[in-house]
Amino acid sequence: MTSRILTRRQMLLRGSTALGGLLVVGCDRLSNSPSFRGMLDSAEGLSYRAQRLLVGHNALAREFKEADLSPVFRSNGTSDPDTPGYNALAADDFRQWRLKIDGLVARPLELSLDQLRAMPSRTQITRHDCVEGWSAIGQWTGVPLSTVLTLAALSPSARYIVFYCADILEVGADPYYESIDLIDAFHPQTILAYDLNRIRLPVANGAPLRLRVERQLGYKHAKYVMRIQAVQDLSHIGGGKGGFWEDRGYEWYAGV
Ligand SMILES: Nc1nc2c(c(=O)[nH]1)N[C@H]1C(S)=C(S)[C@@H](COP(=O)(O)O)O[C@H]1N2
Ligand SMILES: [Mo]
Image (spheres, rainbow, N blue to C red):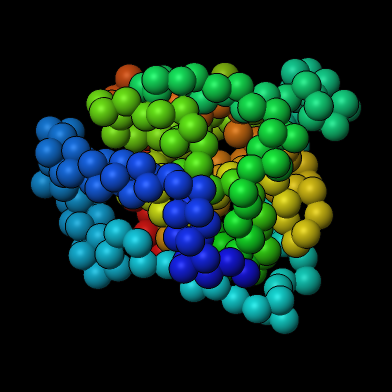
């Protein structure tokens, strides 16, 4: 388990003090954005505001010990995207897979799994809470999302991070997608995970890469992530509510 202090120290060692600056700027920008203000004034904004007030921007989700690990980490939602494109990538152990990072960034990126694995990693044992009423404790290893976003150099106008997935959950629908704000995007426990319980992420749990955003409910944790896009607002993406389930009525900010 990497402590927050160690993460900070690692950042300093790497001389990426720009990251801290980016975070502060991100929060300032966010609170001045008209769409963000609008959301805060809505009913949903009430729980978002309460959560942010009570928990604070950088409060950590609880971390557990190895002894607490669930014997099995079940799969939910899509357990295999099973599209021709995904199957071809999986057949080759995702060697041809590339994570695209684009949108409001100065430096669009395409990263292989090996490149992601070569970056500084974070490991955390956390509890996953699904809105359907089950929980599981798992150990996740991956790259902090902040590292990837810093590499891509977010533009000043970026306010949300969108995750596009490989799976289609409903016939005729767009692929699964999700989004988070910059506060969660730069939170130390928000990682792009490639290992679960010390082994490569199984297809059932989102291979080759899935989001962990530990202070929110299960449906925010996008599996099978193919592309990450920085945007200014969410209204033109999918059904306009910021996620596959949000477009079907779930809350966008799903605090645990
Ligand atoms: N791409 C994608 N991501 C997804 C889903 C999905 O169906 N497709 N289901 C969500 C829901 S509701 C939950 S609870 C978790 C389940 O993660 P698991 O399969 O590792 O248990 O993934 C979330 N992310
Ligand atoms: Mo879920």
